[in-house]
Length: 139
Image (tube, rainbow, N blue to C red; front, side, top):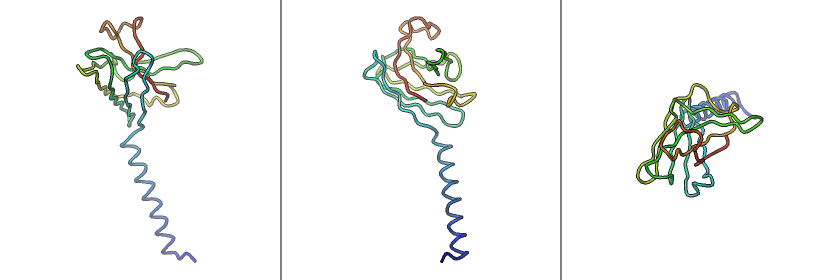
């Protein structure tokens, strides 16, 4: 038979575990694996959405190149919005590694279907006609 003392101990333990789990989730955020697209087969990366910020670490991209980060919907109508603050860009180093950190006005979950990182071969992050897909992930 469970005594009142044991019941209180179990209740306190459940509350403590819930609090620790919630705190961990809030500080760690949602980690998303970014998958390579056709023209960037050796690329890889991760995106972490935590609180109201986005952090991306990417490897295996084209060295010394300009990339931008987008939230995208494919259906029912194709639509995209820059992730973070304009110009939504980062530049890779000589090894093809790059990172991007930006504040978010709102979390993308439920509003956007995917996150995409695209290369701008001419170095102009505003040139949307010649961009090339690099990394992507479903949200």
